[in-house]
Length: 616
Image 1 (tube, one colour):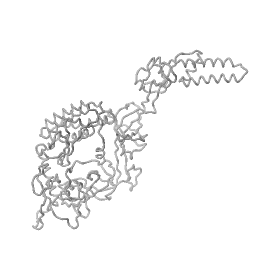
Image 2 (cartoon, one colour; image 1 turned 45 degrees about the horizontal axis):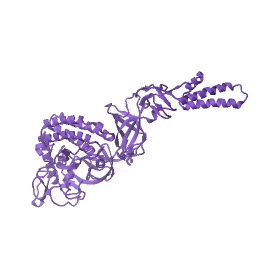
Image 3 (cartoon, helix red, strand yellow; image 1 turned 120 degrees about the horizontal axis):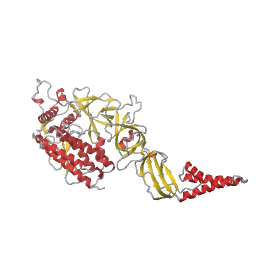
């Protein structure tokens, strides 16, 4: 497998040099005259074109032989942004094109959140009159109660006084029935009604008031009943405790309907509407999908997380969803030409889109390579303005027309060839030699998300958590060193150590968004580490190491490290089949884990991750 990869790398390098010569002759009998010979004035590396030397030699980064850069001017009909390739060169570069078209595309908006109580379905049992709690009929939380169940037995001197007033008022009414003075009879009836109303305001039911009338005697205790059916979620009262008016004793929740509170990034708010259907899943029920509707979008933005709360109402007849469960939600939005939701979109409203693999990003610029229709095998670089990403497509705002054909595979190879020719390219819009530090390959995904990643502040976590995280990183560095030495068994053994270190990380040290982020990261890291631990050969271990490196890089940036050991990020442009891949080291000097002894020093350091200094 290693020999096959090396052969592929060598062929790719020669193919790139081949592109610089226009792909070479298409027939063997074609001959050049001495006057047509192109003189090489500079020598460069096909993988690191920022190095251009006046004579042949080896690349100072990867050690590959330098290739000549041909000098010469442009033909009359050739644009500075164009590259002409023969059919053979296109085949070697694996060039694929796709048509720019209008089509309905769907944006997938992902949100994370947790289950919460429905605030409209909460009931409270409070003291409506001062007194003393003599009996509590529900001793602990979690008990299901029905509406009308007795909850509290309350002693209240004020209730005793009010009962005496009622009994006396009823006696007075009986005595004045035969009175010839209507005003006195009416006054007596009004007094009875006033006392009854006072008892009702103090929490007595009509049935309890009727029993007092019928009995004609004062009771020194009054029972308080459940106002609704549900589960007792809070118990604030204690037997023997004196309470004032308004003191909360119990809280009851109806769990047949729940709220799911989701965190939506501000960049996604334009696509979220009240009434949208939401699909979500909970880790407690793998493979099961729940559904709900957006009923409320918070008018306020959380300045720390840069998110807005989105509330989803969810029926919960079986009680599967529990409060505080973490969920991951997904909203499907069909986009129109204005980047908003498309409702019965006409042909003109359907957005113009290109495959997500077509654009090359650098900074805020996006470059695509367009097939020139009247020039066979010719491709032209063009800057475009892109809208949002929707699944496997980008919406095109400016720069392309419907029906044009863009390169969707091999575009990076075209751009590399143009850079070596010192023509305008992705990294050098004005042409000339590309700047140092240019990153090759592996730069996929949404540019906006990377910009946001740089702006995202690290989570504030404790030193204890960072110390535990150091154990995971130490095991990772041992895997990296084993792979760089072609030691497959060592990588497997250290992957098992990483899994053990991962289990010792206490997620209770984290709260809120940091806790949610770590839960996701821990699952991803464990999956990649298990892939290395169970790998059958070193190539499959190296493949799993790519994702492990990306996940741990994100963790190191978001949670920071303790600083006890340096964390350096390296990049190899030739790894992952020419797409490029990153890895982390705890010391300077390239030790390539993807090629080992074959190309031990291929790659360069691109970043130093700063340790954290924040404390909770």
